[in-house]
Amino acid sequence: MKSDKAKVLHTVLDKPMISYVTEAAVTVAGKEVIVVVGHQADKVREIVLQTEDVKFSHQNKQLGTGHAVMCAMPNLSENVKNVIILCGDVPLLSWKTIRDLVDTHEKDGNDITVLTIKLDNPKGYGRIVTDESGNVVKIVEEADASDEEKRIDTVNSGVYCVDREYLITTLGLINSDNAQGELYLTDIVGVIASDDRKAGTVLCPDAEELIGVNSLEDLKNAEQIMQKKQGKKS
Image 1 (cartoon, rainbow, N blue to C red):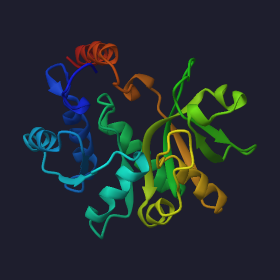
Image 2: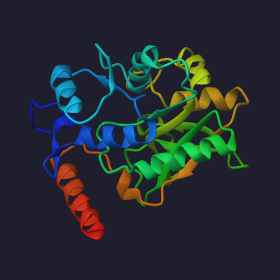
Image 3: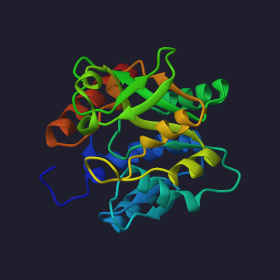
Image 4: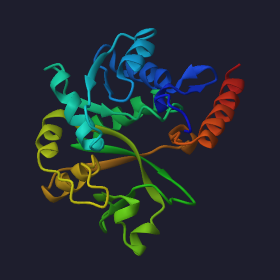
């Protein structure tokens, strides 16, 4: 981002990215929202608490998405059955799409449900690998994908709904044996599939909702899309 500021604090239409995400999360989950903080944790807390009443977990070292979720788990209330996992740098995701993900997860009786998108150019995204029956077998990251897997155009958005008890079990089984040396949250899909559990998907009809912001160009693009969406509402 060419800035010392934490990525999630960069603004889209004068509002920090993280604030869009927490607002959507609170709309769906109420007070059961946990924000995992690391870089500039105090500033992120300050900004988030200006608008939302949420809990925080601290990730001392950035050891991957799986590790971030591990840091949050101890702060979950005992009555939480399903865990929704969102990304702080995906500000366009609507609460309605998150609600649809949860509804499908519960209706289909899944252990994990992955929000997916189809892209003409899927480069850089984790690919959704399915068996002949269409069941999700695994998610493979770009750096670890074979040439055949790289041709898959259905990709992982990084947004999930997971059964809480099975999430605890599978997080204890994943490892950092990959190109990045990190704990990939995506690996829990493979664990579930190999254990004869049910892994499903929900295809997001609007790919623009799932645009991640990783550069100043992405930030500009997100602002343009947000302006367009707000213009349609007014």
